[in-house]
Length: 398
Image (cartoon, rainbow, N blue to C red; front, side):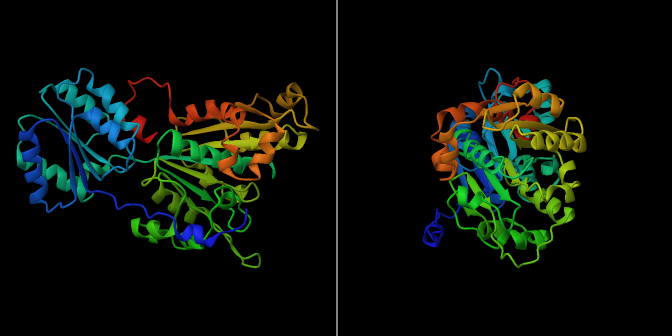
């Protein structure tokens, strides 16, 4: 795949984030909310007739606003529907719920779940305006910790297929799970993610790592490459004679900014760089260790598991055995003995997958067996099948 600068120049620019979206059923409530937003000089509020089910269907196809108002009037299981809403919302949303029930238990359930506020009808303008202003200005109501999931992907050794699995996972989360995803390739000189996505890298990632405090919404609009409507890329291709030094503090600051803007931040971490960034690996995250079944890979997987330590409520390590059954692999029982425990996921070797991976994500997504092999990983990352009783905060922000 050759670089095609013209293609990147034609990439669509992400639409500005709406300040407010309102989903209500009745005209009286709509009128009060309109007045409250008008008093705050909010000019880009969008009103859509309908309740929380309409909100879920709409936000599954569109980006989320800063302020979201949803109506649960007449809904039999409102907390269940709020959990479903969480699956399609992006981090950083201030959610205000309105309804017809003056039930303190419902109020407590919604508040404990992480919503900003609940108001029962008939609505009153002044308390609404106060809550809206607090959310839109980043005040106290919005200080619940709302972050996306951070996923590190590291190959136990070079050539294990870590980047292929990482890029394919990103496309699935964006295209199939309808989540907003950012892919960050931290190999600034030899990274393959831009090639996999058929995109042209820039120098923006290096600038962000040198000055992470400058990363804001305006910077991201200029710095990221939009791959699809919900998938963005930060990747570089720095000169081979350029001295590059990455440090924990800069990366942690950058990632801290990014997880507040995306549902998933997937970081392709070079195995030669990872040992110098052990503080980064202590961040709340999911770590995917990708290996083949060679003796050297088994040794390195065991060493990484020992370094990272056991799973905790904030950090989880998953081992993906890739290209299982390839020539020169250890038999699976011997590989498991060498690692000390079985892999969490096994992807069988197929010549078709190897050929497709050379052509990028678009081709490898056509490999049905590869997609089926990764399906358990996708379910793990999205929380598919979890109990709906999990709180709004946990479901939305991991």
